[in-house]
Length: 447
Ligand SMILES: *Cc1c(COP(=O)(O)O)cnc(C)c1O
Image (cartoon, rainbow, N blue to C red; front, side, top):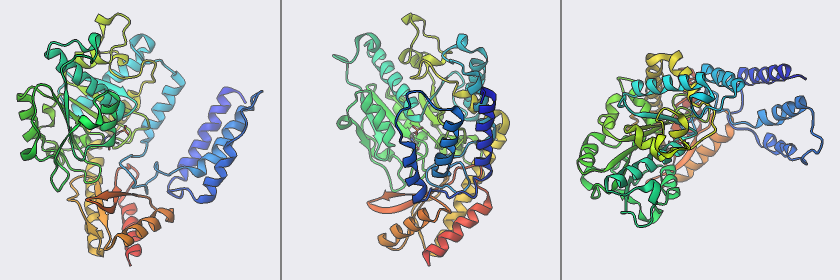
């Protein structure tokens, strides 16, 4: 098979996969998982035919996928892949650009430049900000937090880039009690030390309580949250950010999925005041429904991010437009392209409509489950529904039955010390008919 035939074969297999996405078991059955043993084989010395390699991947791999690209997956806010973003990613794969800077791929750099401007517009964040397209909210958060530390230290008269941490003034980090595990991971990797993190107490909704805010000064990075993973709630940015800024602190916002609430006038109020922060992270691959891995680091002070992520050979010339100076990656694919494609195709209204629809569907599910007798534990301000049955045993058994049904999938969590399950609505493919089916399945399981 020549190159073109091989790619056509891959595309044909992809069409077949997508055509059947709705009918697929949402989670693969045991026998398909056992069949994956067929993928363990000795490394071939002479190599094998490319067509056979592709066929093996499809024959054993496709049946053992999680159908998170379908309409019936409610596991996490992970979204599906918008057709245009998946298509743009395919074309970009053919380009195979090393999108470090303009010279490595002028069209890729231009598309990412435009994507960055649109991201700032649709999220209504300071237009002067740097926008880096990285692998994940984890990596983008790490980039922003390193810019935060370096910038606070510079204000305190310490050159972190050249002199490192030894002997530097201590920078303290405050995070919500409910902070995402990956924020802690980023802080740990950056050397902040898990035992030194200061936790801001949260209220019953999982939001930082301004009345119990730990002391904040110009040696402090405070991380806030737009979209708590269990409840979908937002920290009270308008109360906390002005205080923190006045004290000289750096405010970082983890908005991996929740920041997209800003795209719709119907939900923007949830994030009131968030634009006063210094840096933000969000994902394309979650609620915007672009393919993995595409995330966004946004930093109001362009040069702070470019200094922290600088990979120019000459230290002093870090250009805040080259993506290699805004993300962890040096050689990189142009992760902003699928985001550009999504925003261009949906437009501002299209994104807003998707957000509105998911929020409406979430409220509907919450009301319907409450009517059946479930205990809905959150206010459902966004797209997350946190649910429990009458006893922990029943919560667990209903969860297990739902997960093994192959018809829907959602995950478990521990909320205030007891098991619960969490239903997240984030796929562009999830229509009201799928929601009705989810409610029907949940109703049967309850009885
Ligand atoms: C998913 C998530 C992250 C991490 O994002 P990745 O892109 O998976 O690294 C961080 N914070 C929140 C609130 C999340 O939901």
